[in-house]
Length: 359
Image (cartoon, rainbow, N blue to C red; front, side, top):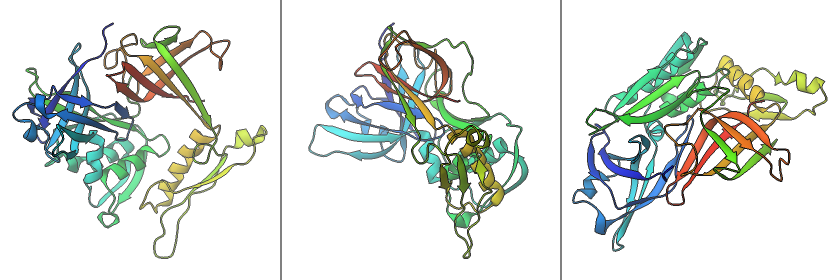
């Protein structure tokens, strides 16, 4: 399999239309995470830049898009934020994935009663469609209803609201994908996907990362640090009018009954939350995730030998790990888990899926 090579395009942020191909852009590591923004820092060598490079990389007005040249699939996009240069022969540019835009928009006053969690998140995000990037919504109902309130006076962004709902018990997942916006491939479209599960979940995935094989190395991080493990949790709201609401006490009863120690944690899930029902949903989700701690697998593979990012697997998809033997796992290890984040370094031919193992 050929190494991944990308073509970079500078685009108008409002329309997604390509302004210039940026062949002299030397990008750093690309990465994406479920329900969160990431950033990329790179340099634009001015000697090889097109005539319209300045307008195509204007901070606040443009976005940069990386396309796999072999498959034609957009792999990554980011809004141009800082751009720095002067007497040096190159510019330093940093771009943040479209999720960061939601931190700069506010939903205003919003109240929902007995609404599907997906509909709540979509309603919070809808204001970003007006006067924003070429964003469309792709939603799938979760089947779980909630009451939800956000007040404009709380100064909480769309991103804060979406992350809050996603962090509740059985909360939907979300991400923003970049696709071609027309058949002629002259512009890009951003798709905000909100669903109970993002990606393809299967016990028999197409993408297998093996050792010996495409894997250069792997690590398993097991943690019971604060914020990663607890057998009893209370979530706290923000103080309002000299009062501070709390959730009920949520315990991992089965673990405690089986001899686990009592580990307590107090969590403030997001700024501005005061509603007890919302705090309870956060506590229920936290105890489900943190009872036995966290297990994160980082798989560093040779990109030119690994299943191809964007075609064989992507964010949220199930992938397989197949290790014959290693010092940590002398008898080998085989598992299937979902990709919660990834990074790609084109220059070093390395791709890194990050898997969170569910107990």
